[in-house]
Image (tube, rainbow, N blue to C red; front, top):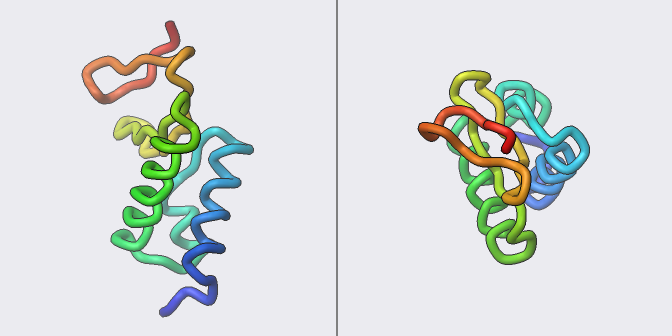
Length: 88
């Protein structure tokens, strides 16, 4: 089933959810926006590019253990073994 939302609206939805909640569940967002896995990954890629240019102190990080995407700040977070988020 095709998503009723345009790409820009979907990306802004994900962006807003990350800013407000600091994390998001991929499956929940996919169900809410009616998008598949590949489309979700493309949207996350677009947002990561945006953050690399416009919000250099923050990054979108995927935590495999919790299966969540997190919005992290470089000044308050570091990564261990590429799997978990550890506060300094």
